[in-house]
Amino acid sequence: MAEFGRALQLQPNNAQALEYSGYVYRRQGQWLRCLDTLKKSLEQDPRNADVAGNLSQTYCILRMWQDAERVGKYALGIDPSDVIGMRALLLAILNGSGDIKRAQGVLATFPSTNDLISSSASGIVASVTGDRAYTFVFARNFEAALKVWETSTDTAADQRRRLSAKATIRALAGDFTGAQADAEKARQLLEERLRDRPNERVSMRELIWVYLALKRDADALKLARQAVDLLPPERDALLGNSNLAGLAEVEARSGAASDAIAILRRLLTIPAGETVSIARLKIDPVWDPIRNNPGFQQLLAAKEHVGP
Image 1 (cartoon, rainbow, N blue to C red):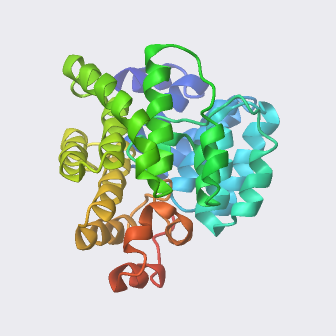
Image 2: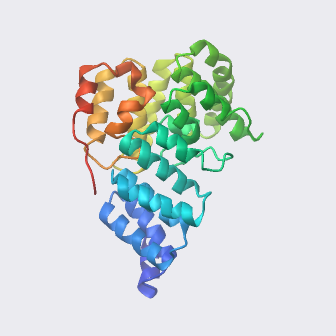
């Protein structure tokens, strides 16, 4: 951050220094400074789709849905294949209104080769399946979600991701028997990977959901808690809140309803709209095991924090 500050002292309108300063402020939870800095960066470099996409994503986190949608469309007007802009526009619709049909219509306009995977929301189940497939999960069209992962490149990382995604989608559909083969293959690969890289967040999240698909709930909970301990919200307002939301998902799926609801109640009172919103809670199958819990129903009738 000090280097960005020195660059801005010499060049106050340096678009790149403003951009990366904005990302640091976001992870620090300095939301007003983040918005102000990203807006200034975009003013200096108005054709930068990544900055526009990140600004739209930040509006999603702040649950400022109309602004998120407006800037997301602007980003895609610059670069129709900008992943950050595509994700932000989808989230503005799904998390803001819960309009699955409209989200599917928007998704159909995106390049079909992109799975829409982002590291910023790496704590939640959609980071395992990718947002393209998860849009079909919202619609409970699990077969269409699986088709997203029918083909993939052959790197080791892609193989782990494909197996994990397919097992996770089947688990969400309640098809634990069908999930077993892919889940067991993924488990072996991911456990080996984490022996070499024990703190790799992507592999941890994939293995958490593989464990759930294998009905190894205690192992999934242990690893989800470890992910939060490694990067809690107090250290990172972006990734930490995503990890916390991911823990709530696992708790909801493993019989710890009251713990999951307590986390969701907390996340609804802070800027965490990328992963938790009332509209998203109403439509997301991941919450089905606790959907009829009175505490969960109370959340759906509550207010959510909006803005910085």
